[in-house]
Image (cartoon, rainbow, N blue to C red; front, top):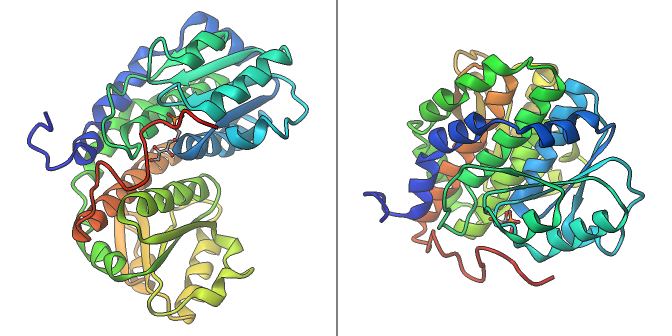
Amino acid sequence: RKGGFPHYMLKEIYEQPQSFYETLRAGVDERVRNLVMEADEITLVACGTSYHTALVFKYLAESLCGIPVRVEMGSEFKYFTPPLHGLVIAVSQSGETADTIAALKMAKARNCPTLAITNMQGSTVTRIADETMLMRAGPEIGVAATKSYTAQLAALMQIVNLRCEGAFDDALSHAHLAIGDVLLQDVHEAVTLCSKAKHVFFVGRGPFYAVALEGALKMKEISYVHAEGYAAGELKHGPFALLTPETPVVAICTPGPTYGVMVSNIKEMKARRAPIIAIGVAGDTELPEIVDIFIPIPDTHLLVQVLTASVVLQLLAYHTACALERDVDKPRNLAKSVTVE
Ligand code: F6R
């Protein structure tokens, strides 16, 4: 059933080119399209990994299409409901997460139009929301979300693309190929470093901050190595005190407006003797000179870099967990879906 893979998680990581492509190919139906095009403000409610895809969406939708976006954790939203306007989107792989369901119900009660993005046809969120956008990830058995994360991004990036009048058609249509390329990326040097560490930081800026949060969550939940995701500029406001030669920092640093400031952040971290694992684009000649380990991703569109960098971090967490002989598909204390508040 694992198709020759040692774990479901690895199998599901490898299914991502297809699950991304299928979710994209399913498109956006007319009613969902209308909801999305009419929204002058969007609030997303989600938990865990789904919260991180929502955060990626916020950065992309606000910076690329200028729509105000708010992202709320399901568990907070119900008790501290913010003033609500516009479309509310619940993002949930299982469609059964109690906190996300509770938040969606609150949004309904306030008469907001609602949309569910889920992998499970007929799940509770689909019965509550006005409309559903179904991800085509197929069943995900590993407790850690992998292919459902990139399929959520496929759905959310389509919304960004719709609002930007198809500006990203070309980038999105090639994304599955780039995801396929990074599956072959060798991460063993970084795994050696992380599997010896007690603490690992993950940093990035903009959408890569959300990717860093997700990289840290994956590392924590399956390898049990303590990991923290930070916006790169925040590290010096406290966490710098924790940097030592024993605390590796995984930094995502790709071309664009934040490249220069990321490079100077990396130099500051190096000066505190933290080993740096950098994820940057292939062909970058500056970064490999200043970091300890350089992991290249294809030099593609920003949207695709978000996907490929995320997949590299999945591989890093997976192989670190294997090196530490953890129960990768069933991490301790965790369940696939959290149906209590
Ligand atoms: C982490 C993980 C969880 C889920 C969270 C929400 O790998 O799987 O953090 O993302 O429990 O689950 P859904 O998306 O089913 O609402």
